[in-house]
Amino acid sequence: MIANSLIVMIALLQIYIMILQMAFWTKPAGRKAFGLKPDFATASKTLAANQGLYNGFLAAGLIFSLLYESADRHVAIFFLTCVFVAGIFGGLTAHRKILVIQAAPALVAILAVFAGL
Image (cartoon, rainbow, N blue to C red):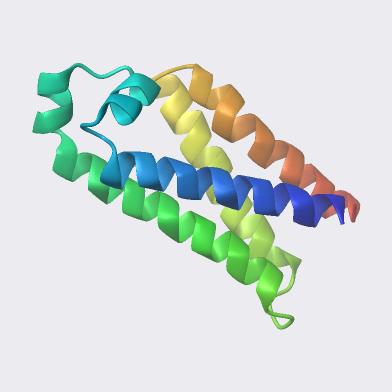
């Protein structure tokens, strides 16, 4: 139950990030969330939308791991690990806060799945 709740929260976070990147990248909410200047946001809009799509796929995989009985915990662990690795990479290359916002919750969820919580 705890692991499933964490998976849902992380999937929702990925959906939120996807929406920011795909729909609000050049808008005030997106620029504020990612600390972007208007010119850079406009120039990188297509790249951000591409990145947002990948976040959407991560969310879809996490939701799939919960909705289909045939999907065992390995599916959840795989997608949580993808979120964790993306968070580590983003934290090291873009902004350290990504370690706290994305990587740490994914790691906690991975541990909860392994612990059978």
